[in-house]
Length: 319
Image (cartoon, rainbow, N blue to C red; front, side, top):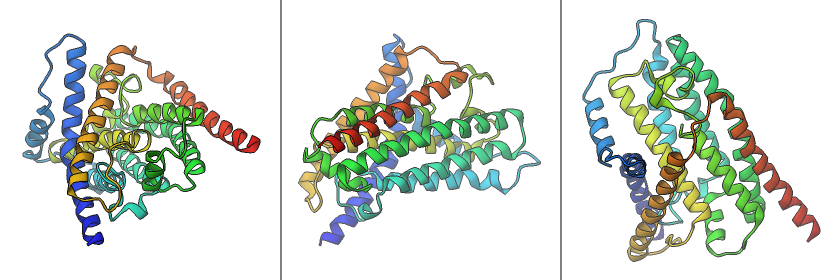
């Protein structure tokens, strides 16, 4: 029965994230519009956009290789697998033993490489420019992420996300400056990883500001739908990761029943909604950053993560 419950929780969790991804993007856009005094599109608009794109055949350039054909599928598959490892309404799912933060970072890196390869495959200037910037930014984002993983691993004694969430839920770590610094660093990395302002500004459609969108200019039809859905799922994954680590309250423990799942689901929806509202407020209030300042932005995140690890080592040595 325990195994059956873990499998059922895993399937429900995956279905929840797959269904919530477009709604998270649509809800964030709607809240941004409201904060700036505009009516804004419906939160359900991403579903309509995906449905429209899925009905169209993709058009490939004459010199496009098989990479342009399979890159969106590979990126989406890696993101779905990563999303399956991040707990939402319940812990103790069947894939919980494999929910390692290092593995999660590797799956996100696979999706990033697939996107960069798709941008470079056709050989356009925009695609190569966006791919070069994407990989250069990852040189700052990935070390910051790994340092945050190091901080959490030292505190919880493992890199398993399910165990870290349980440890945070039980309050065994208490209030630590290292956790606050790691939270700020992870939030900055999440902003960069999801092409959110101030890291990217695709609304202008200028080569000096585009990063992620520049690699999708040659995509169309079903391929563009896969890329857009992968982007929405990646944003939902990052919000779920922040909620699981730093807002673990309300999550159903391992082996819990359906009633605890329902309560955990309500808590998860509230947490994701609150994080999406914070993201919308941040993007509405922050000034747009020039793309050449992004390394400084991610460098600050790397410095915060390094300070978190250093403070943790110092406090451990003094103790």
